[in-house]
Length: 115
Length: 115
Image (cartoon, rainbow over all chains, first blue to last red):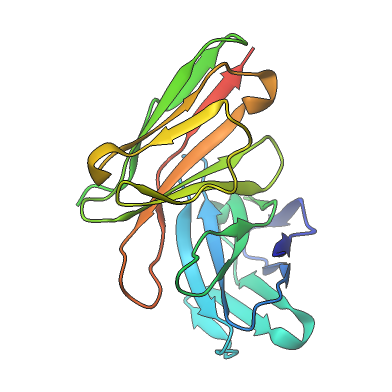
């Protein structure tokens, strides 16, 4: 069975600090996808990134970066120079490959950026 | 282009009553998913439609939940009779079908409160 663990329930940092959100996953599949979604106060889930299990290259998009390590089954998310607009709940998720794309989510991490 | 829409945004009902949630996916998206987040827990998969057919309903909690997608367009999720433990946020997502992997676009969710 698939499982995603986000051990950090809530994190608060002062604006401009860097923050890392942890995500650890479990799966028996050799091919799978990992995701991060952002849920701002408005409620919708906003897609941030998708990674497939064959691509362990880290990715950077502006202030966001992701560190995927298969050896530790982790897919951590770092926000550099945090801003108040980054305040949200962040979800890590996992799915199997093509044909069964339902997402298995973690419990989410509530991030609060203090001005 | 309009995103995934859900109606109502909030619903408060008494235990034992019936509630119907509606999801309008992005036009042209054959895949439609329902998920639910109970307070403080992970977002859990409920079921997956491909057009009007149920592809996977392994996450439906019990037979008080009935999902339909007549004509392969919008979908409804009916809870009858509602119980206290049904309270939570119900998300709908849609995606294209046919490529190697298709991103799921989420709606804003319906917050259901059963008193």
